[in-house]
Image 1 (tube, rainbow, N blue to C red):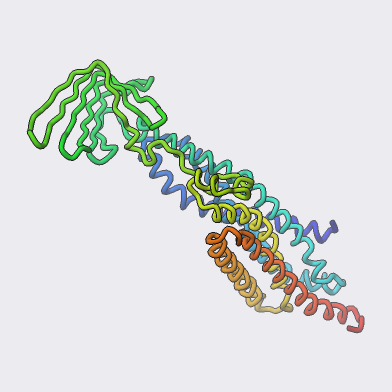
Image 2 (cartoon, rainbow, N blue to C red):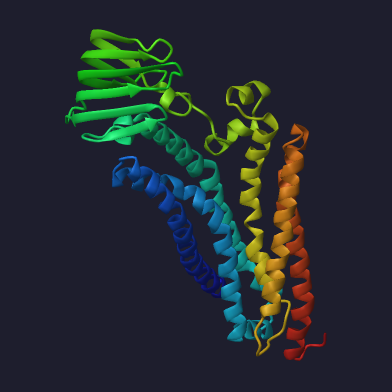
Length: 376
């Protein structure tokens, strides 16, 4: 790797890190506001909030890192052109392909980062995120039950607890259940405990009384009990069942998905196959936007008015590539045999990059030879 390669590559990585930090911060703040409201309002601690924030970062990085790489390349080559550094290098005889070599190294670096994030880090983080979400939802002590307050964890249900001990024991419990259409039951107990089960959390009450008022007859029935178990699983969405998200499933499972596996996970086999190939295709695609950005900026000559036309051209060329991916996804999720359409986008980006490099070489290389006194 020559001095020019090291110089441009180092500048790209520094600016890539800066733009990544800015974009991740913007996305993080947007996500953190809703996350903070939902967790803190449910009685969770700041440590749980920061844990959820960390687990959501890989998905945010997958979205913003390609954009940061594209913007960093535009910025660096705009500066090289504005400072006439590219003109000097072209005058020295460096072709457009040679000038783009550090950008190719940067694209490969970006592709490697996206490969690790998309196929290893993000699925693991997403699985842990969903597991922790399930645990937080199951934690009715923190979410619904608060000492000294009347709370309404679900429509038709009212709970009051005088005291919650450090061991999690409830003292002097009042629970009113109005979920049944024709009856109303009120439970009072001296103490209670929250227990976990396969179907969800359950509350075990000790030394209490259950009073049931019938709406039809108006009669009040009273039952004394030493211990009574109240099922709270219906209060939580899903009732303790584990639902699968495509973003948490390993890539090899997606690529080898069968109709039986898809049915067990509650997914469509065509969508699973496409999602697996899309992770690989995305890592291949991110190699080319930096090359497209740099090649577009090299199409024009030096101007005091800058290279805004070339910048707009680079942006306008990337937008159709995203439209290609959207069209490929729409077709592939309907037919499992079209799963390889996921690679249409990186192939189109590679062809576009080759065309732009060829045009840049036609534009710049003869001019550089003339400046050196060599007949074109």
